[in-house]
Image 1 (cartoon, rainbow, N blue to C red):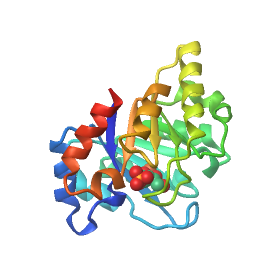
Image 2 (cartoon, helix red, strand yellow):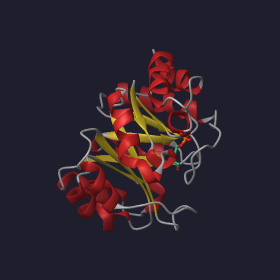
Image 3 (spheres, rainbow, N blue to C red):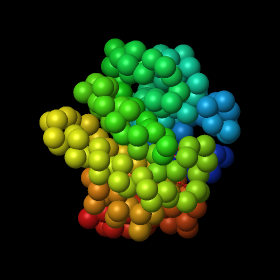
Image 4 (cartoon, protein in one colour):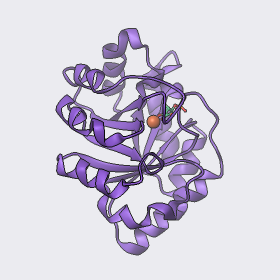
Length: 216
Ligand SMILES: O=C(CO)[C@@H](O)[C@H](O)COP(=O)(O)O
Ligand SMILES: [Fe+2]
């Protein structure tokens, strides 16, 4: 299972160092939560921070956009050095167009589903995406409790992917720790985001090793 530490729980005054620690620890992705204070009740950062970190890291930059009108930010994210750009199904009436725009920018396209959104709401666009993010908490904040009912959604998506011969990563985000990662790994998730579990600990590298071991 790939591990994607979320910088939402990192030390914003020492981002470069925190990223370096998780990169050396063997994380595959860096998860970057972009929030606009409209789609969710929280504000973080945008393409400027992606650009600043790009100079210091070779990790796959996994940008989770929690914004209204996501189409406005794709070009800036591309120019800043993003690799994967995720758009919430709930954030646009034109999900096919936005995902196509991401792919046309030579970025990997991800669709994100809130806990209250059924997996099959994304069925029509699954052949288009490189990654599906199943939110395991309601988006907006780090440190929330994992919603157990989302495990069945991961399993449903994994079964649909197999049945239809589709090819995408299944990512989970929110409340991931050494216990919950076992449940989502078993259900078929291939990438796990972890924010507070990694960065709110004394030894983030050890936390990543523990997650990887638990997922096995
Ligand atoms: O997208 C989000 C929150 O909306 C996440 O990526 C959080 O950063 C996950 O934090 P933890 O639940 O792992 O603390
Ligand atoms: Fe996220």
